[in-house]
Amino acid sequence: MPVVVGIRFKDSGKTYYFDPNGLESLAQGDYVIVETVRGPEMAKVAHPPRLVDPEVIVGELKPVLRRAELADFERLRQLNSRQDEVLARCAEKVQEHGLPMRLVKAEYSFDGSRLTFYFTAEKRVDFRALVRDLARTFRTRIELRQIGPRDEAKLLGGIGPCGRLLCCATFLPDYARVSIKMAKDQDLPLNPTKISGVCGRLLCCLSYEHEQYVAVKSRMPRKGAWVQTPDGPGEVVGVNVLRETVIVALASTGLQEEFLPAHIQEATRHVGDVARSRNAEGITPAARMRAERQERRADQGRPSEKRLLRDSINNPDVLEALAWLEEGVEDAPLDLLDEEALNLISDDQPAPRSSSGRPTAEQQAKRPPDRADDLAVFLSQETPQSPDPSKPASPQRPRRRRRRNT
Image 1 (cartoon, helix red, strand yellow):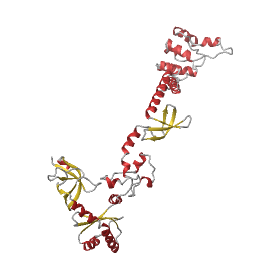
Image 2 (cartoon, rainbow, N blue to C red):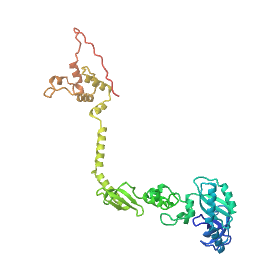
Image 3 (cartoon, rainbow, N blue to C red):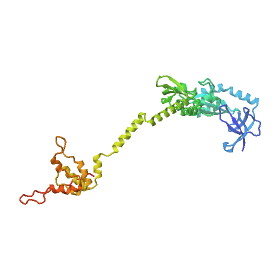
Image 4 (cartoon, one colour):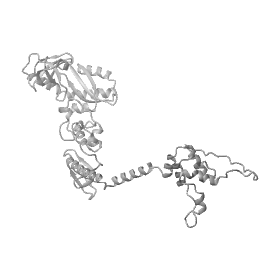
């Protein structure tokens, strides 16, 4: 594994790996001169020399030339002292060319061979003519870079709403991905002036504690939910993530009290145990309603007496005889029935009663016998043995067959 040293060109910049080139005694915070694609540059050691995996290294390792000396610091100071003058001259050239751009900062390279101007603009700007004019003015290589609002705040620095130096200008190497959802999860006011930084974008610090807020809220009841507390049921009106407590408005008194999630869980478990025990005893409204539903289902499933009677008779001749009896036909084919069927027919056909409620003698005489062995005697009494030839024969009534309901 190769030995590398971590180098940063700015305090809030990214860390790049360089070859120590034999300087094993480098410590964190030391200033060195390193070789880059733009020439030699002064940088600070972020990590001392150490072994890393080859997969971590991207591209070719540039060497560390030497340690920085006092003369190097003096040279860099003289170059930076000319920034105000250079920016003023460049602003004049921009105004002459009429370009919609605003200059932010000017930087010289370590050896003074390159001058870089940073500017902001709403759209892309064609500055090719301006570059040629600036090259003739400063007699050096000119670079113009268009940056965004966040990069502008990082280059210029400043103090944030919290009263501290900007994170992007001190220690934040990459810009954090922030969204309005992070502000909602942390119960922050959705006011642009409250959640925006000096760059006009959302605060980068919104992402610092977002995971903690989401993890804590996942273990606590949501706002607007009804919970059981040691003082009775109530509605959750607030959640304090830092203290990990829940603010509940009690239903009995309307007062707002603060409870720990453990207390709410214990109260909920106790109420659930009491409810289950009462439900098992059958003294709760739910248990009563369940018993009533079961009774109704049992009544609906139990068939009626008439249905039981018809289901018990499977002989089609019995059904036909029943149809004849319902129509009052005297010559019903009762000789096809057995004793049990005759009993069912006699029970199903109530005889008319007198005014006193008892059947008359004539009705008792015409009533079919209850026993099958007396059926022949009954039929011989009602049916003549031989027809009288002197009387005209009455037309025989056709047998009607009643249709069964299937």
